[in-house]
Image 1 (tube, rainbow, N blue to C red):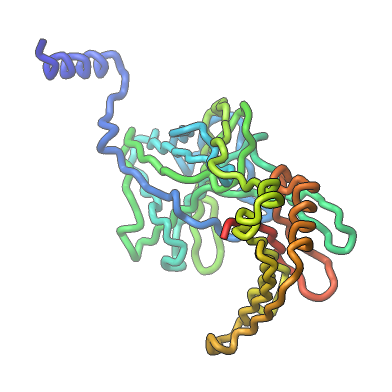
Image 2 (image 1 turned 135 degrees about the horizontal axis):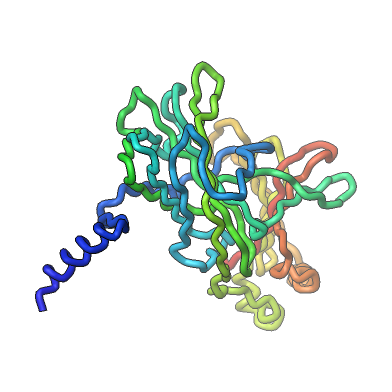
Length: 320
């Protein structure tokens, strides 16, 4: 059988039937998987519309695809935003992931809405109570400037491009409806003007976490001196004086390390060392087991309204 003739025949038949055919391998693709998150925006971009469609200023069809439904270890997912020009004229879209291009820019923001999104909590340091922190997390910001033509891409009528990205927001495992949204903004002289918006059809996906590749066996550390010796516990208290860290090693060594914000010789970096009895280390390990550290839904909290230093407080346990 002549496969090349068969493929050509199928393409002709599909075109006659009105089914669009495009070479996916030639699709313009933007890789934004490593783009860092910008500062959290307390309000906006606005969640967007539930019904699919677009405004007059942004004639695109937005589609949401999941290359895999496996959540990564940080509970984010890989997603693809497919943007198709449904207008009769070409449109110019920003395509750079560089957040430091010229001030006169257009910005295309892509984000998700869903009940799958993990809630974020803030802890009041005075009361110790947690309360929900309302914010809108985004997945991609694409920037373009007329002063830098390489940051812009002209999308012809009926042409599509793909934005491969991380969700950047944490998602819960389970079955949920998820909707993608787009907002195009023009920034000039310190002011922004919304050009248009678009919303995808909601897709229903079952998200699953990857099996944990490694889990510390803390019970073993209590029984096996060799396993205990390999343990390192790190505590990072909030500080405005620079980076500070307190290490508790399984062999009983204690290290308090501080890195001031200003430059200074390495020999001058303050370090305090001490030792404790191994029973004290085991007591700490037992406390971590008792409090089910690995089962906690949130291991990081933002400290606010506390006396003295305020900041981010992080607890972590590692193998040495």
